[in-house]
Length: 106
Image (cartoon, rainbow, N blue to C red):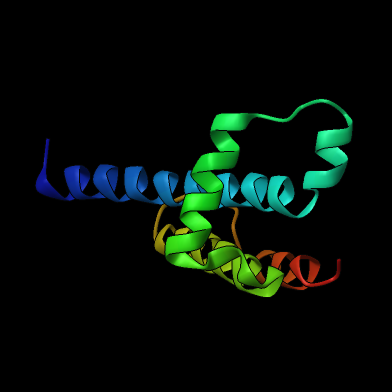
């Protein structure tokens, strides 16, 4: 196995991790800003509430909905741009900009 194949495999793992983190932040964003509706449905998770409150207190990421969306789109964009050299990757600038616009539409 060549060094270049190992590097590409490591890059793919890093980009997959960035995508996973951005998806996690989307879920956290929904949980944080739709908390009242989630609580009314009875899906309140006490441990997650404490973790998110401590994270908000130290990082302040949830102070404004725009910051969390920007952070999520930034991570997603970095993961998309990092795989642009990989063969058969179907991520294009059009899809990145569509995700960017849709992120701020609601």
